[in-house]
Image 1: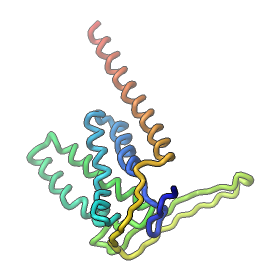
Image 2 (image 1 turned 90 degrees about the vertical axis):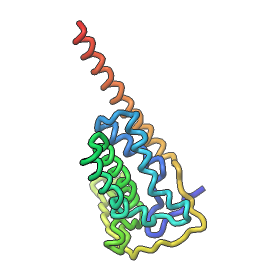
Image 3 (image 1 turned 120 degrees about the vertical axis):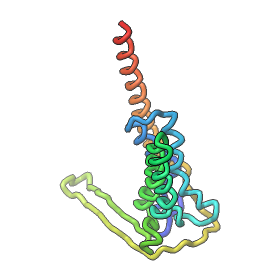
Image 4 (image 1 turned 60 degrees about the horizontal axis):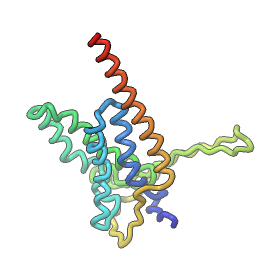
Length: 193
C-alpha cells in the first residue's frame, strides 16, 4: 500500500521517528532512560490534531507550542527548580515535531505571526556511473496557511526505513547506557578497594 502524500510534500515522518529521534538525543545527552522515554513520547503530541481530522494544524506551530511552554519554563525556574530542566527538554521535544515535519511537507511553523506554511527540501544525489556528477537541491517553498479538514488521513505509524533507523538509534543508545553503567560500576569498585 502506497503512502498518501501531503499537500506540497513527500508525506509525513512516521510517529516512530517523532519519538525515537528525541529519545536518542536525550539518552546521548545523558538523560536517564526512565526519564528520557516519557519526555520523548511528547514528540508525538502535535499529531493529535488528526483526531480532529485536520493534520498539520495549529498544533504544528512553534509559536502555539511555546505559548504554554514559556510560562511553564518561567514558573519552574522560579517556583519548582527541580522541574526546570524537564520543562526545557519537554519544550524542545515538542518543537522537534514541527521542525521535522517542515522537511516533508508544508508546515505552519510560525503561524499566526507568519501566515505561510514552510516546506524545506534539502537533497544531494549522485549518478553512480559518474560520482563527480553531484546534484544539490535546496528549496524553500512557502504557501498560505490553510487548515483543511480531511476525511481520511493515511498516517504512517512506522515504515521499514523508520524501523531500520530506529534500530540503529536504539542499538547505539543501549550501547551508551551499558557503557555508562559499566564505567560507573568500575569507578565504584575502585573506590571500595
